Length: 210
Image (cartoon, rainbow, N blue to C red):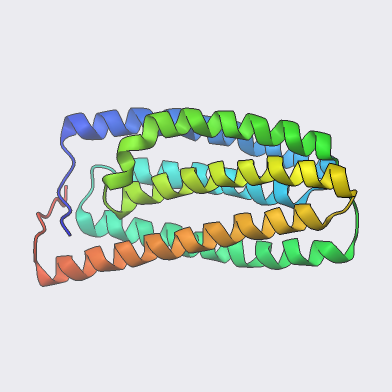
């Protein structure tokens, strides 16, 4: 594994893409959160948490973009631990929603999920090259893909809520969304720890501590 400093041109290009997706996620957080309350959908509430978490992820990524390898990897660890810290309680909340048996509004779920899919397709266009970056850029890519999957699941869940008039599809979708986020956090954490280990061993790394 090799992590090298970003060039000024690359950092500028990456920051421009991150600013665009940051504002998309910041707006979508409010939209999806309100929709989740209106629809009484745990899947939408879980998705809104992903949106605001990703917005914070993008902001932190921009802050450490031109910093050294150690700081970028450390930021990735903070992101991963934050995802775990929010994700685990959300997982229990989603499961506990089953006991309420309150059927969510499938129309709001479907419409919000479709808007979320569109938003993430735009984000993927800007972030596609991030998939092969270091743990810092990888965290951005993983979070974006996770959210796209989550919104697809919400649309699917809305269909089954309509067909079954049951909360079960919503709970299942919320559980899967959070589980995917937790898995992504583990992937990011593993990559960041590997980068720090390689940095300590001073193998295949070029330090950039500016």
